[in-house]
Image (cartoon, rainbow, N blue to C red; front, top):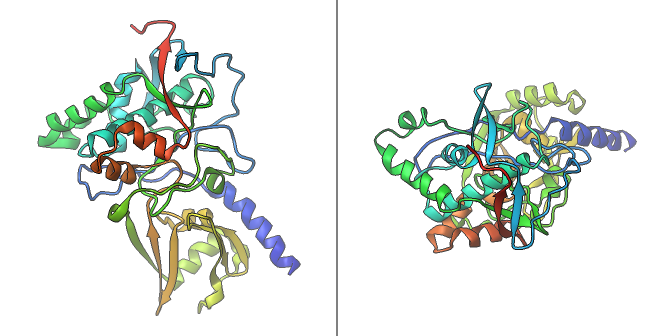
Amino acid sequence: MPGMLLSLLIGLIAGALLFSSAEPQPQSSSPAALLPLVPASEAPAPTQELPGAQAPSPAPDCTAAPGGAVTLPSPLITVSVNGSPVEMKLEDYLIGVVAGEMSASSEPAALKAQAVAARTFTALHMQGRASCKSGCTVCDDPGCCQAYKSPDELPALWGEKYSEYMENIRSAVEGTEGLVAIYDGKLISALYHASSGPATESSEEVFAVALPYLVSVDSREGNSEMVTKQEFSAADLVRRINAAYPEANMSLPLTPGDLDVWGRTESGRVQLIRIGETVIPGGALRKVLGLKSTAFEVKKEGSAVIFTCLGYGHGVGMSQTGANQMAKEGADFEEILKHFYTGTELASLEFTEPGE
């Protein structure tokens, strides 16, 4: 028993360090395509930082002014694009972000909600409460900041739909110009993801930071939720797990106790799972196996092990699939944002120095 407890402690620490939000960013105009996981930033967690975050610096102007305004020095930002710094206006950058992060055929209100979330994420960096590994304000690496498609990439990406899709994206950005989400007068960490299944996840379950506006809510995805099955041979599964966690000491043939879920969060995601002779967080196993989410069921069929996952991404904050479904049902972008970011309100950005 002491050995198992020690293994559990080691597994938890190792899992927290291993888990990363960097994932492949599928991009397609097809509504059936998987939407990407996108991180955002906030103060560091005890064992794992929210992606792209640093400890908040003592910036003097982090709170919205009376009247719901957040003041920043300038609308100009520096974006690391393919490793090179490019200066551009915030609103121009957001067109490339929304294009890179959400299907351009999505509902107008969903695209607007995405634009506000992306603007809020960027404003947090502009305010100095989050940092980019490139040294620029933000970068085009979704594992650090947000995906970004340059104007030169979009014609090839959208083909004959270019004019229509560009109008969709531009309308979403211009229709929400300057709007950001705040909580208690401060910019929020506007985390979002592709799909969360039945419910979103509370921030502390993934990042060990409890934020009052990032709590579990109904995802509102309905029948649109993403369900995927990923199959592994027993031999491949054992190889992958033992390579990442030698203390698991897994071997063939697998027994029922070799993959045993020990606990789930309120939203149904795997919190802890026993793998062989150790126990690790569900997020750690997700990383090792490349699972779409931690909301999974696992079963053995013959020589295969099958994981059925609900959703795609970390599940915290706004579900892009849920946002699109809400928009289809008549919700406007503000209703969408307030649903997924509990207790937040909208504010406007104001700049002390005009951009050139």
